[in-house]
Amino acid sequence: MINAVKSKIIPILFLTIILAYMFFNFQGLSSFLATSDSDNIESVRKSIENAAVQCYALEGHYPPSIDYLKENYSIITNEDAYIYHYEVEASNIMPTILVFKKWKE
Image 1 (tube, helix red, strand yellow):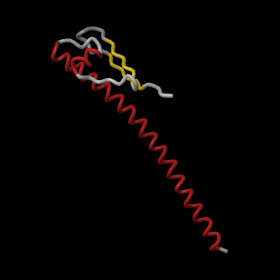
Image 2 (spheres, helix red, strand yellow):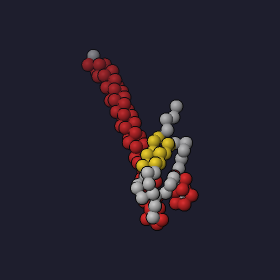
Image 3 (tube, rainbow, N blue to C red):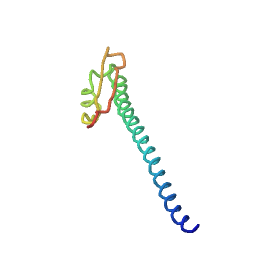
């Protein structure tokens, strides 16, 4: 009788452990992917900022637009994945650079 109970409990316990592991592993994966997205956005924003600073160092003014950076400093943008906000106040003041991930449905 005890062996019959053990033979039923062990597979159920094993299955429960596997399902719990998969659940918590999935939570970790989704957390990792969310962190990865924010890291990518910051990396894209930083590359635009670095190109703007390089332009200022070489030309004595910040670039008037992201298009200027694309044409003269080899910046590549992905308008399908990101929204870019580049606002210039003056040629000697660092522009406001924001990058947002586009919402996909």
